[in-house]
Amino acid sequence: MPELILASASPRRRELLSQIGVPFRCCPVDIDETPQPEEPAQAYVERLALEKAVACRQLNPAAVVLGSDTSVVVDGRILGKPVDEADAVRMLMMLSGRRHQVMTAVAVVDEQRQRVETVTTDVAFIELDEARCRAYWRTGEPCDKAGAYGIQGLGAVLVRGIEGSYSAVVGLPLMQTAALLQQFDIPVWQQN
Image 1: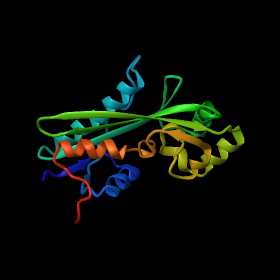
Image 2: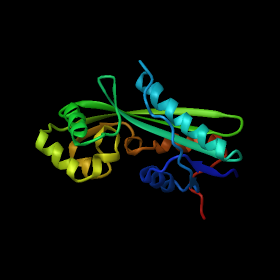
Image 3: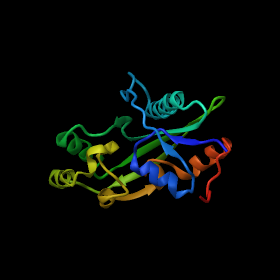
């Protein structure tokens, strides 16, 4: 069975991949995450997931590599990680009282193949005011999260409901990831 490498330092992705019983090691890579002009959100997350996987595979040519990227999208705009408190408040107020999409792309590559799949989940937020957004920022949780919130943490209280994959919103759609890995001869539920 080939070695699997996760091209990410995300603790959430590590937890999710471990949850389905897949042994792996991490090899984060640094790529430019700037959206290209006029780049649609789905193309953006797919490009980043694939670039991460390919860059990591160049360092580990015998391995199967999994790359992933998650973006929050509202009105066609990609919301990345906030740069400061004002940016986080701006993002959270854009999401306040409405629906948005969370797009997560998963790319798996080996020496011969590249597969990419994107999962889109609709998320509905409660109404927020600026004071609540600032209080949430002060918890420290929004700092490294796309869209300035984490559904798996304190930010769960901001979410009225979701339609789609919860694990995709956290950072890795498990059903689709398992299916992709099986195409590369990496089964789930492995015992150590």
